[in-house]
Image 1 (tube, rainbow, N blue to C red):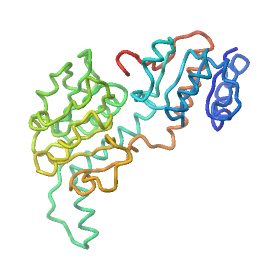
Image 2 (image 1 turned 90 degrees about the vertical axis):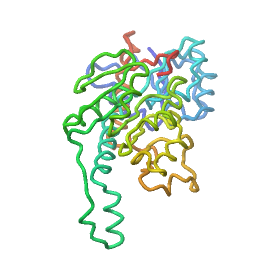
Image 3 (image 1 turned 120 degrees about the horizontal axis):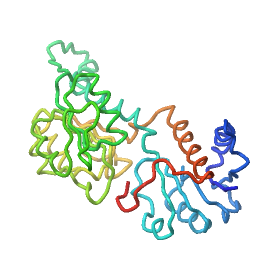
Length: 318
């Protein structure tokens, strides 16, 4: 019998999933992590959904036998990775759970840029017929995807259906389906001059922090758009906003920010061709079910002593 802790509002849904064939409910005890007085001393695994840093620290203090924790998101920069490493606690994440809506959001941002939807919308609000506003298309345009993981692959697959030429980066340099070229290391910078769209999907690590700054922006096309669905700090935010405001790049669609929520007096709100998205590219009615499906599958694996899915490399940070 293993004891797993999760939010009280998720326990019934998890029990239903664990009762589906093969039924493992007899091998798993589920306890609420968010109800005062719950004995967490026997907890071996837990889902951190709705837990802030203090609640997570309390869980680690109260659950000395915990061997596995699960993140409801893909990014794990807010986790105490050093402590998990020291205590030998495995960490899994929700990589892939939000890939579909995020990829769709990226395609919508690229289409909005190509079709100049923001300008058409502004003209409508002014009751102005903008029939002479020239649009563009995605077909044949060059797309550079920084990060060929689950989210990157979903973006690539959808962009390929539009006939885009796609280049991608990954750590290994291995070929990626539906791409024309794969590069590793810093070779992606040599592709900036030809990319019409640059999409950032990478996690935030010391290696990726500020990976696009003044030098990289200077190499981009003047008609290029920068799209970020990774983490805000992977970009030099001020440098990006300056580049858009000065017309050195065509625009930026940013779903993640260094400071969230974005302050009401932040200059990004007022810069034309900056799409301000409140970290909601992954929003979908299917997200919760996908996340619980993954967690339930890992509970089965954990109870059976099988390898877990989406294990985070605590040294690499993703």
